[in-house]
Length: 290
Image (cartoon, rainbow, N blue to C red; front, side):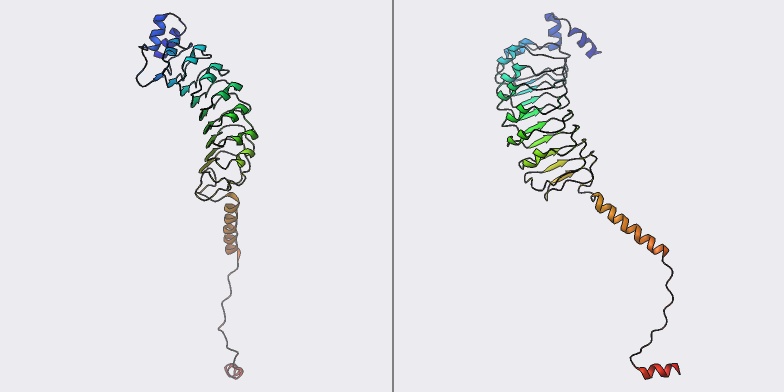
């Protein structure tokens, strides 16, 4: 019932109704963080823009589809969460927040990212999973300090070759995309530590032994017939990983066991052996016959 009431009140622009939604948000919080998640907000509360020392702003799980230009006043903002909203495009004002290091955009309706995203030179973590991206926006490849990239659950069939320019990238998460082959560009990124391609359509995995920085590869729920070969110490999560042999070896073992079992069942009983005769001494053998 509480969420229903909030949803109705969110349509009423009066100050009293907005105060009901925001609570006692009058002064700059001591921890320099404002969390307005799950407030049924349909408009961004402008009073937040007065907190110019704000570092963290969480607006997750609302009904927002735009942001006011006044948001640019928050030049100290380092973490911005806009996930689980109704954004179809990323508001350009976000690209003016040059101290941002973590940006959450997951579970919206975004089909592309603006070129202005490249202004976020300090961004090291980007979550843009569960959107409508059909290709990885090349502008992401200009975020030179990016360390973590979550782009899963988007209909992306491949990755651009420009991605290898992100030499600081350590983990890429592409679970639930439309990959039909292991992205070739990842084979040229030995600095990667985590690769997640779970729940795709990859049928064959190339060797990853040469990726010297790799620590974890997740490849489960793919129609593959082999496990990716990795260097010693690298953890694999998927079929035929450390816990069981790869399919070819397994089938060969099973076939040999089955063949041996059938051979024992069909082989006739061996005749009883006659006492052995020593033919080294012809005279002794002749005397036995007599």
